[in-house]
Structure formats: structure tokens, C-alpha cells
Length: 89
Image (cartoon, rainbow, N blue to C red; front, side, top):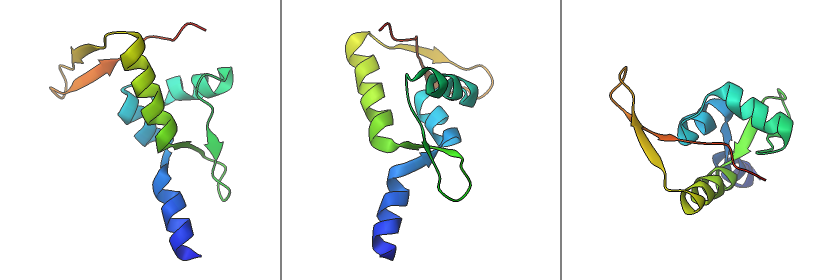
């Protein structure tokens, strides 16, 4: 049973980690959840938003295949982020 729980937990990530993967803010993910663009699951113990890693990876693939991603350099941390534009429905 604990192996199954550990496997499940590894496939779910926090809103902070999901935002980092996508290069957007947590507020953006909350808005996407509210509007149904990227629905979040809720953690059963604390009701926090959690996301499936598979859903995040699929979204990244969709964004990459629909548009050529634009890389933006952040002056603060000298890191490279993916600029994400809202997907048209």
C-alpha cells in the first residue's frame, strides 16, 4: 500500500512546482484552474491544489507544437524561461 501511495505522490506536484515547470506564476495557475484551462486536483488532507506531472508535460508539448516557444532571459536570476501565451480555444 505504501508503495502505491509513494508512486501516486511522485506523479503529483504542488502548484509552486507546476508554476516553475511552466514558467508562470502560481496566480496564473489558479486562474487557469478557475477557467478550466488546466484543472487542478485537490490534496485529500489539506485541500491544496496539486497537478499531475503528465498534465503539465502534455501542456508543455501542446504549447511547443502549436507555437514556436520564445525564450526569455530573466535579469534577476539569469535563467531562461518559456514565455507562455494563452491558448485560444
